[in-house]
Image: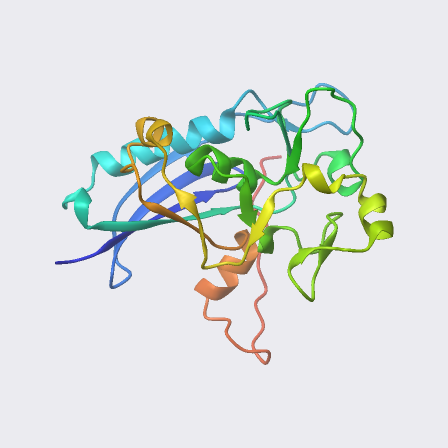
Length: 235
């Protein structure tokens, strides 16, 4: 029996879903471009409506439609999104406002609680993890180097009240954190209907776009350098 793994890659321009066999060979793929950013005001750059989740659903269904094997041989899902997006959620895990792009002026600043219905503040990977699994957990690796109150020694939220206050995010509004390689939860029935991915598969935390890119390029030691290039934006 050949085992298969699903990789979900939600980037700045598209969502890609690829099924790999246990030898690392891609056997099928689905892709869906993201909609143009909404820019309703100065410094405001948002993903319109629920575009991240919608595009992942479309890309996943295309990938699964092209899968040549037995879905019973698929053993897990890896989830990765780009860094520095901010998602503000209601208590049920749906969006309280459009997801902020990494280019949004507020993403690099402390959180400001302006929406009464806002219950959680997370990244795009946290939001998609919640939609996939129903669990309010995210990869710790998507919070490094930003305005989040992460303790980089423990890879958990800081216990320093001063640092927490500086972020503007109350502790109860933060997701639980898991390390890359650990399971975030399993695919819910609703997520299975949306994506075509089998219900009950474990969804595994990865890292973020550049960290995963580095691993994929073979960066495994401190004496190796990766020089990445940015997306090519139209003029």
